[in-house]
Amino acid sequence: MTPPQLVVHRDKELMAQAAAARLITRIVDAQASRGHASVVLTGGRNGNGLLAALAAAPARDAVDWARLDLWWGDERFLPEGDPERNVTQAREALLDAVPLDPARVHAMPASDGPYGDDADAAAAGYAAELAAAAGPEDHGPVPAFDVLMLGVGPDTHVASLFPELPAVRETERTVVGVHGAPKPPPVRVSLTLPAIRAAREVWLLAAGEDKAEAAAIALSGAGEIQAPAAGAYGRSRTLWLLDAAAASRLPRALYPQASA
Image (tube, rainbow, N blue to C red):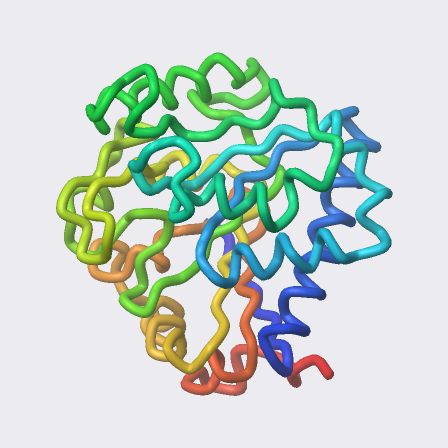
């Protein structure tokens, strides 16, 4: 387990812009070293804010978009094109504006897709897609993603892993169907903690006063069953990207002075 690093920005807009710049750099470095890169996207206001900032960044053209694999950490199990689906929001924020290879955009199945309304079958299908993309160098059933991003919920959930629910307890499968989620919609598909921990870097995004308590709990040594964000970490780096409001309940000793 890698100890988390914290970066605190003045406000959510600056956080989104700085995170977008950081992501561009990480993708470019990975493409320079291996010829390709892989990123796991997250939804929610902070994930979409980052994508919108990336779309507006002049440096976005430094990325070779055709050599980038995109995956998702979770998805609302709704029909294709539903405005609440993470992939729909990501397309609006960024993906439709950059020259991606459609074959490398790995959206999670929709509820009107090949698995119908069976979220568990959809999860198994996505797990098989991840396994097919994993190479011998990945040493496991999912690719070693360069960056896996997660929004942190006010209840400390990440992806669609909610406190105390069965999905956060999963230790074998890489993708699961989630039923009875405490926030709508109740049915979702999510990566599990073992899949999340396969990433080289895990970035946790938290902005706003409503995330302050969650950040404080997750970074205080809480258990992952009660605070799923506490169990999200990368192989080589775990990075918490926060704004000042979300960091307001953290001891100042945990992070340097907030960015301007």
